[in-house]
Image (cartoon, rainbow, N blue to C red; front, side, top):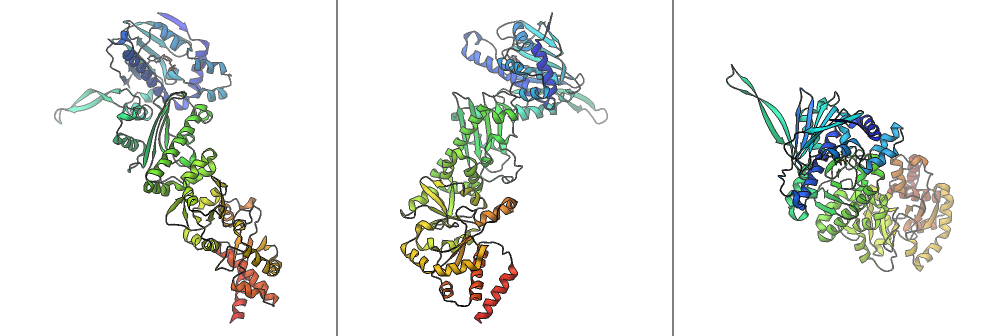
Length: 624
Ligand code: ADP
């Protein structure tokens, strides 16, 4: 037997792990299972590729047993194993370059170092969070002697010869007060299901079950030893696509989503090359209930090398894709990657960006392949997808291809590309109307001229459209123009329109005088047919609906008061009569009423409803 001192770095690392990862101490089991799984992976590879290992009796498995009374926990595998030098190198020094880098970058400032540790695998040493003594008995595959490594995780360790029947490694832990709780069937099962369910080797739990035998009078307690496999042992996303059936995918979806309905779409990617990762994503058929809650639950789980890392990381997907369910499994991230690290990690950023592209391109092909199904998708998830238009600049073009809107041109939804196919060469842009329910928009006076000229207008009736669309200047080469704005109609003016404009200039001057600073401007309208007036927003101001929305979001305070532009219809009977009205008081009343009725139609509040009503009554009275 020989007693050896830990490398100073190991000593420091041990101290740090025990103190900084204390609140997640259950991860020790994940780390040990992951080591066993790696050891099984290595031996599996050798038995498949190396002649000298082909004779080995390789039955890959991980066994866990415990003794509550003695406070021990044992994890055993039939993997590659370690000889005495390897035990010393692997468990006595810091051999791994990753950890060495970490130890070198340790500052001694405990707070900073605890944050740093997330970047590196903490591995085997985490056992000392829950044990005050650990024995590792290991026999390297292809050799016939075993060695035992023992330590209390403080200053030193010992290595001696030992006995082990097969190749592999057994980690025997003497649990401390913090670790006592893990000598229990239920807590082990819980942790394994949570973190290691998809480790691709069977994990067996050994436990004792108490039974009662014999007659009621002299019932005897009988203890029975039982062994049960406690993980599903299959990482479906790691299996080759050709061997998976649709039912396999659906079953896994049920497991991770608890959704009773089958998903609308699933997509399985296995990337190799500069980055090794697999993803399996699902689009649910029905929107999750918390879709519009700020505290929605993240739908994508992160695995590293088939080991579960987290299901509580919203950064794995952009928020507009928060309805996506599934798994990301990376071969390149460290097991103990922390949230802070994930958010800045280049590997993660690349996986995320390819994942988003993959999802969007699958949706694009669904749209082209099965429009009916895509309509259902858009009904469920159109609103979050539109959030993407202002969140995800990089993919805006793709998102614009996916977007669908209602339109004055036809029933149902249209894509922007389809709209463009129908548009006339002269119309010079894509027109849309916002601010209100579908039927209000369809009947808005603002649409009158467009109907007349046979120009299709998109009906943007979702509350979010207003904000989103103003961030989208163009689709391909076509400008998007809001009919709620003063400049939209400008390009459509004919000489005839300009003629009429001229004609009512004197009246406009009069109305401007009467309305004073209630309006930004008064202009002749080219868009009205049946209504005498309407209000629009000046080209640089937020539209009326946008102002209402900002108000509803509590952001009105910081906003200057925007004044509308009043448009009047030169062809309307009221306007022509008004041109000839001599009574100044009447002109004033009618001017104000033209403004007020237009505001009411747009859903605005009147500042002084009493004054409005008296005005209305004066006019009514005069006409009787
Ligand atoms: P990591 O697993 O991140 O490399 P660890 O500290 O957990 O770091 O383990 C250090 C090394 O010890 C491993 O890289 C591996 O070579 C060896 N090792 C640990 N556990 C086992 C095991 N169960 N079987 C074989 N080798 C092991």
